[in-house]
Amino acid sequence: MEDEDKYNVCTACSILCDDIEIETENNSITGVYTACRKGVSRIQTCNEPMPCTLDGKDTDVDTAISETANILKKSENPLIFGLGNSTEGAQKKAIELAKQLNANLDDTSSFCQGPVVEAILNGEINYTCTLDDVRNNADVIVYWGADPANSHPRHLSKYTYFPRGKYRQKGYDEDRTAIAIDVRESSTAEICGNNSYLIPPQKDEELIDALIDALSGKVPKVSFEMNKKRILELANILKKAKYGVIFAGLGLVYSLDNFEPIKRLMDKLNEVSNFYFNPMIGHYNMRGFNQNLFNETGYINRVKFKDSEVKHGYEYSVVELLKNKSVDSALIIGSDPMCSLPGSIARNLNKIPIITIDPCETLTSRKSRINIPSALSGVECGGSAIRMDGVRVNFEPMIETSKISDEEILRRVMEEL
Amino acid sequence: MANAMEIYQLLPKTNCKKCGKSTCMAFATALLSGELRLDDCPEILEDKYKQNYEKLSELVAPIENASETGMIIHEGKCTGCGNCVVACPVNVAEDPKGTGIGLAPKNDRVILKVVNGVVQKGNIHNCRRFGENKILCNACIETCPTKAIEFV
Image (cartoon, rainbow over all chains, first blue to last red; front, top):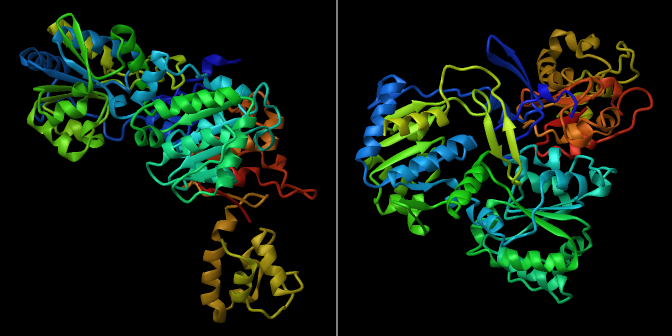
């Protein structure tokens, strides 16, 4: 890319758009070019920056950090949670800290795209490709249980359906087919037009089996109202694909008990045509956390460090730990579990001391004993992150700040310990 | 969005020709396409049509924000996804290594670009809907997931 220096990376979601231009005046951002609305709201920093507090009263960062170390030192079974919105440097530090503390470590992938990333990193699914490959080659793009028009606004325009690619020069209307399979008529489904397939909730596995039948030349059967011709039509498009990609959203992941049906479908698709599989990850560096923890322990999330041992299992997921009230303190980094977990489980956070490290005020930070404001990664501090397709992206800060990064905060907490 | 018939119903319907058009219906169409303004009708400015004038002013307010090609961007609906920017055939032709492949625009000849999270009109004279030999291209309308672009 010529003039590569003038471009910044947007860290609002895991597409990590690397073609963002900004205008600054007196170290504040006054204009953002090419980023979507979601990106602009992240780049223009928080509406409500988080103050540094201890027991609800303003304090300085040094006191907050030493008090954090005190709480963690006294704690017998601490929980470290979040890190989907942190740089890889901070994630590695958090893993070190968890080891030092014999802590539980989990992130949002525990109730998000964890199973898909796990299957990819374990090598259970070999059919993955990068978003650049999709742009250059893909002719059939399937969004299954995903609505990128709202969750990742530039997904279709930057990588999948609309751009011209090396081998897709004629434009979206001639060269590419976008398909949406969902339980509702989403904004993405509207773009897909006739290639949008509505199914009832929890019926994804049934449709997968029907598609496998159709791809094998059998008559597909489903228990819900969906014309056989429509399923055959869909199977036909998939069969004729020269380079197909399935983007799995949370809708698909949540409706399946295990990963077996997806594996079956991918194997069948690759028998008859050429298909790839990619997860639609939300937080900008959730995959980075999964990969870093995987490199360190062989697991992507839900771990408990015990001396030199690493335990892993459902019982170490943030949901189970809080449900069973087995943790006695929580260090939350760049996440808002009070908001994203069910009320009955999040309520248990109130009973233990919470330490929040975040640039912006969140529901969790309002209930925390200690709040340590950090620099907004990608805007106020640089680092690296792993894009949803596994590509590492490095980024520089856009503006200067007096706040310290979460990596530095964690380093100082470890020093105090 | 108002249509010509709705506008016509509120006009004086006298076909006085003072606006330069032969009928009030023709005036309504000209108003809708941005060729004439409401104040070009001398009769609607009279006191007896005051109520109708106010209603008409409300109806045509969005049209006044339209570009010369009749494009209106509803900023409140736009998510800045850039589908229209990348799908626009003129953008692709003028900027094949920028917007054509989904990246940021590399020159000012593009018609649409995303600024502060909302799509903005740029070099509108390049639009296929501009000028005498215009064609009714709808690439930016049909690719918009939120229906934020409209032509009058």
